[in-house]
Image (cartoon, rainbow, N blue to C red; front, side, top):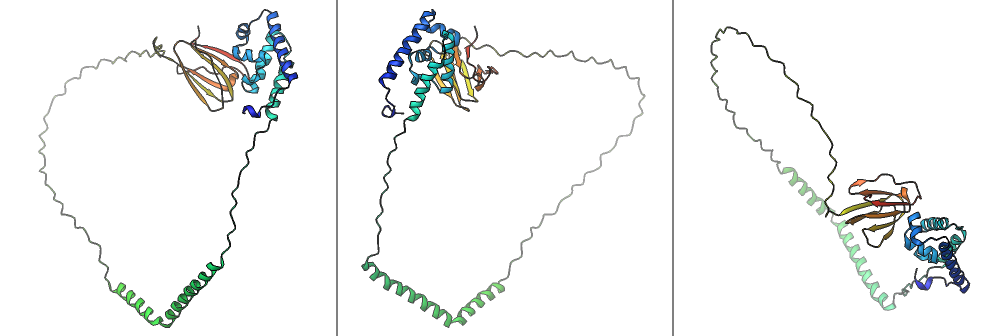
Length: 300
């Protein structure tokens, strides 16, 4: 939504937002908590925690996850989440109440052309000439039907008189039979049967020891790979090594591939909404629907 379409915030709402920000910060500091402490307890990204505390609701993810994060923030500092949720709901109502600008569509007007009198003057004689030619052709065709019938009979007689050649028969060459002289059979020789020595019993081969070896660990220089496949709409925050976190909301059916050199830190807003594969190995079910999960890959 563009800046022009946003509903202006009244002075009273702005003053209320500033007071709420100072109150939330004061309550948090009174309990001896920092933003980093809340992150360690809830695994919610520090940028989102700052946005909740400052009332910057436009920086929050989708409403489903934002309301969940607000509830966890309020529970951690020991306050009621109702006032914060109410302020966030007013923000959502303002966003939905602003109608989108509708651009007018200009439809070109096609002038209604009427045939001029001059075009009618030329069209009538041309139509009369065409009609006269059609009538003359039909009249001549009816007056001489005999010639047409004779030409048709001559064509049919020529077709019947033309002999149809018989298909050629391919002669097969005579087959030659080579006479093979019979092989002489040598006379049978009488041999004295000699006793057959006993056959020693055969020993069965020893059983082969088959063991499944674990895949070799990647080298120190090989990058780490992470594949995330979404089965439901799911918010993610992925930190690669020591880079800033990468936040995204995956839609159902979307995939995300990331690489790192040392480790991944993954925050999941809906544990049942994604399938995670690390280094080619699926991690299985992470948790239930709507559960916030924190992962560090590989585990320390």
